[in-house]
Amino acid sequence: MTSSASDQAKEAIGQRFRSLREARGLTGRGLAAAAGWHPTKISKIERGRMTPSAEDVRVWLDRCGASDQEEEFQAAVAGVREMYIPWHHLEYAGLRSPQAKVMPVWDSAHPGAPRRL
Image (cartoon, rainbow, N blue to C red; front, side, top):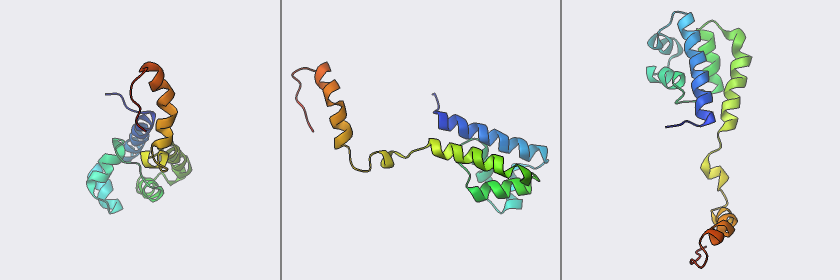
């Protein structure tokens, strides 16, 4: 299964967060306890399954003694967020317009086929 560019970027950010945590000598559970989070949050961020909020980034870096890297991490996380556009935002106005755009392709590939729109 291939992952999208945004998935790969989230995984890369997660690895950077893991490296910071490990360099500080913290376990996932230790960091979660220090931050007041559920331990699964650490795992989700590190594996790229969850994009951390700006506050999550601030707290993580503070607990790992890396607050001086906050601007860099915030920019990286913001870049990941910009890569992700929810489907419902793309098709907010409905599907009629996108379907109408592909109908000429459909017609050329299926001459005489009934059209539904």
